[in-house]
Length: 255
Image (cartoon, rainbow, N blue to C red; front, top):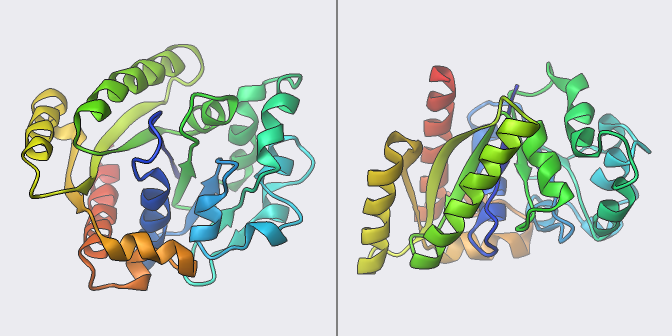
């Protein structure tokens, strides 16, 4: 089982879009996949076609030890992958977990009994370095960083890399950067190409070859509760995420 956190401390960079579409693309490639939504906004849950308002139990109960992962897991109706869902309740988990023992290891311990059940676990982390994000990073073997090729994204990237180094040193010796995924890429913008070249120069083969373009169909898909790769299979964004899933599967073989 490969556990990857999809993380970036900057908001609005396509983390949730990446998590949902990668989960659907991996499932379409025959990989047994679990998506863990660690964001109280519950966007990955909704984007997978699961109604967050109708949930009786969520990842919140799992983190607090009030329910098992198997009790809470549901499946994406269209995506053929499992979802550990989230909703607003999760916002309260931060406060309640402060008192708990091994509070940053709660997700890791919940996943430990399911090693044989999945090939891939993808964790959608919130856009802040919170106790929830820390749980995602402590549970993961690696981090996939979606990022836009713009100036501010480079600023935020150095913060994230430092955070990952700290977690690696103090809490999770397995944690490493799997790769950077360029998303929402505008082929017409000169700056995008400059930042992209800078990333390749600085991070080398850590930068995934796949580039996900800006794509209206990917943006429309969540409102239908269907992952973009299934909503319009011919869309450029969908084709890119399917290619990315293939690239990730290959990269995992060499890890």
